[in-house]
Length: 113
Figure 1 (tube, helix red, strand yellow):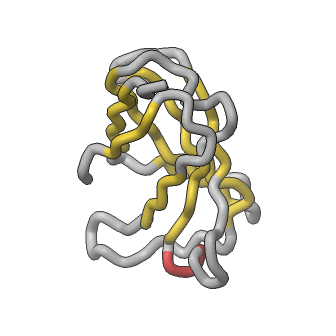
Figure 2: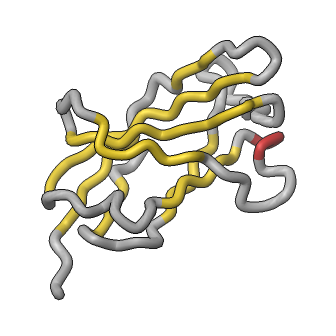
């Protein structure tokens, strides 16, 4: 996955992820998920800076493994630098959790103003 680029202090940035199975590339059906979150932290850090809740941008997205995360009003009030995100899915039927192995990489640059 490519490194995603963000700007410090932005309040409406969004990312979209498609969650697939590594063995065959098929989309993970997220319709049975009770929650989908992305934890955001400094690269190689241990403190979670934000936890973003996944949403369906359009009807049918979850069935196709597509989830959208929107950074809130203070989520990008961070120093410029390298960050990473981890996606975790919790399923409603039995509360099992599945964490996506691949970490999402971000670079946050300073805002001009």
